Length: 429
Image 1 (cartoon, rainbow, N blue to C red):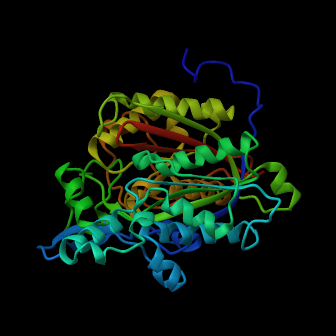
Image 2: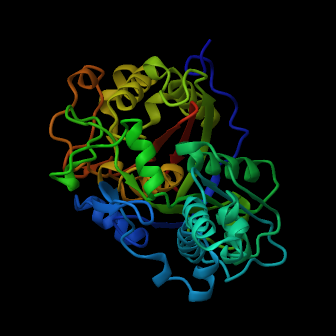
Image 3: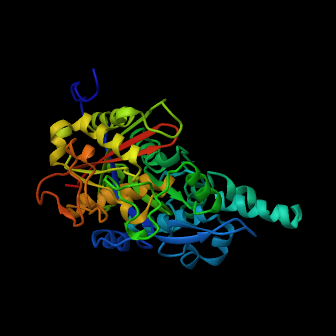
């Protein structure tokens, strides 16, 4: 019997309290500016001319960060870090301050860090390999190894806040940021940390990444109108647009947050993780793996499908991926899917790969807190096949969520290799 049909378990697994939010995206350098631009229907997608060193450039669609992290971080710290770690530090610093925590962790507080990446220190690898080939080994930076490691962003965040409980780095392609939050929830529930700084980061706008995705025919070719290029669920979608940035949430045990009188943005109540075991770069037909992750998250949160009022969809704007996700949601929610407001924010800031699940988790918390589902400003005509499934995609204007009463939302993430992660959130009251 599937998780969707079995009886809900006793609510023995507590939620994690969300007390801090931070992000930096192509829409804005912090949470407030990103949220405001998203609601206004703005786009952070443009064109980028890029190519290998001493080689020909090519024009790609890209969503570059609205605020350069080097302009926010101390110069010495920025110079020591890969761009992916720079983004993580910017978002983590905002989230930590938003949570009302001291500059560094109190000695009596068990603080953990979980920051996921997809491609990690790709910029450092490419830059230093070019230096090796053109200038010789003596010119390679002594910071190369720390900066290229996947755990580099998490380690830097841990150093910044004085995290001594543990530091983790999940690497599960485009599901990494969401998996980091699932791990953070587990650390809180297992009593291994009082506070977890969790999320994802990515800085992959490099010639190699563009060329690789282009060879997979995964990228949009709508160069005549970059702002309309990322078109999740639209009939004319033709691929995704790469973006960069980071999203970080501060999670706390309910007891720890209550003891210090913390402001609560919402609750992370459940997580589900599955794998397709189907194909390295394509989702399972019908989105069966994604559906299983959603069912597992609902079961973990003790939430029936009827409790969900909002879904933040992974929705990268690829023809196959969006359809499979829509089929997965239909399999779980059935006719009730027509009543759920579905947002797809990659339309505005592109696909941030390993950061996507974390950035969109921040947006999901904000959607519940503000009782507003963000718009999909590029949606002109819903794919007819997706339309028949009953997917209620928010159009070009924000859609109000119920003004009173408790709210619950779902955020989905899928990644190459068959990774699926689903997270559930509820309002603070």
